[in-house]
Image (tube, rainbow over all chains, first blue to last red; front, side, top):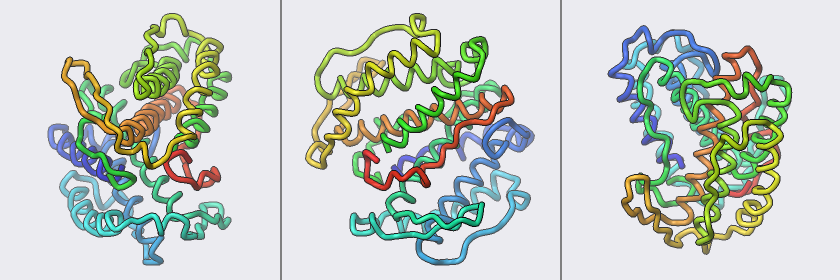
Length: 158
Length: 158
């Protein structure tokens, strides 16, 4: 389902190229509050989880430095190869590895790597659902969210 | 991720009980065009896929007959046990079974059962993302979409 998310995300990045910067940056109700900010957010969060699972340092930049489709695509181009390298090497032996997460409330939660992977998948699909509403609100056809018909028949990474 | 979807759906059904019927039925931009209609749609589509995979007859009722939270919950109560029985008996041996789908355009697509299962998962999460925007638009806090922290650490059914 990561390949599904990457394919849909790529289509949304292309979709953005037809939309004015004012619409991409406009403040909207729900989610992180805007179209381009959402794409920045899903790219950021996916990479951050991958880094955190591996005990590596996190990304802590604000959207303020990424307020154009060009800048967001640059971030995607930098982050995606590292995420792909991790996801495409996934195997069932990693499923039950423990990850200790410190939540926003400072409390520790004991998670498994598999749970985190599924959280990452759901996180992006949820935010893309928000884009689809905002798209219709500005009179544009959203990217298809269909998973079938994309030739992605292969487990959690597919 | 089915258990995740069922848990989130249950929270949205509860959430609806605090919202006026006018808001639940109001026509909105995106998706199937309304809050209650979306919940009807995800329940309907999930069950229809499970039935189709098994070569059983489909459900072909209109939302017109389900325009109240009581009616939608009745549908959920009828459909969910059958869906659960199928999903909770899932095993890797079913992954590559072939399902021949006739699309809206009349064309046949050759899918695998695993692909259909992942499509069902993504389908619901996408539509729930739409609910989260409409929720904020009417000034209400949406149901959390987080998968982590729900104690659902167990593969595709989790």
